[in-house]
Amino acid sequence: MKSVVRRLGIDTTVDTELIDITPRVREVVEELGVAEGVVYVTTLHTTTAITVNEGLADIADDIVSTLRRLAPEAAGYRHARFLHSDGQMAVNSPSHQRSALLGMQVAFPISEGQMVMGARQTIYFVELDGPLHREFVVHVIGLQK
Image (cartoon, rainbow, N blue to C red):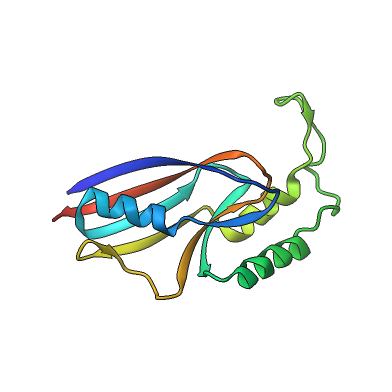
């Protein structure tokens, strides 16, 4: 049995965006040589998310629009206050709410050394409070080839 955690960096370019990380996840899975198992993809931030959807720009745009509608910028959030721990005002509550709607992790089975995914499934790293340097984890668990 093999269990390996890889921490990968990603630089986001705008406030809110969906970035296709599928090739990077596949590369880790193939490099580790697991024949049968599971791969978990997890964000390390509370204002980002990991999600799966069809890899089309219009769908990504629709997801961003829906998130903005569900968690608007001005909604009287209690988090919009001075944070003594940070020494500054918290202005990113909508980002936290949007992250909670999408989730922090996805998982896929690995069979015969390959991730088992639908033909149109794309793994997205979702930036909700950028642009920033971010990290996500690819955790592969399984039996070696």
